[in-house]
Length: 150
Image (cartoon, rainbow, N blue to C red; front, top):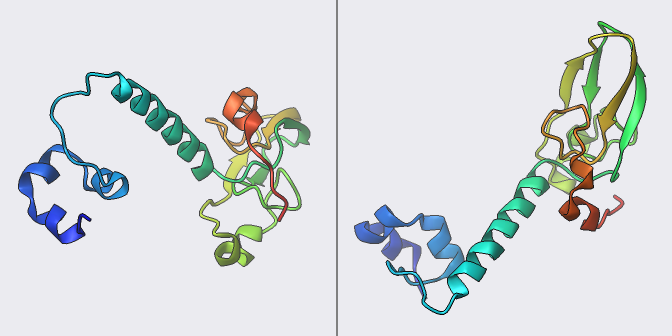
């Protein structure tokens, strides 16, 4: 078993590989890649795992689609980024009252409507252009995700 103290004191290991990966994987450090191809498979699994972690950090997937809403030009809106609001796609303060019970880390996003008319707002909470939908909900990992009710 590797202790945290021994990893911190070992300058060669801490300088060449991040401490968090050593503690999580409990693996020994190797400078040469594996010869049997398992290194490539492990790399693909790690990339997939990182992609999953990224979308989990953006908020709970409320729905796997977008919603069209009528916005008033010049008016400010508060878009729910945590995914727990009962007034989707807008914030109702759930992130404040249920922060510790649900372990919510996201905060709502203020935005000002540019013009009057319909807009497509994101409900999957994984968009790269919040609060507007950019089609991220069509990605396979989003479609495969299980939506839980809280």
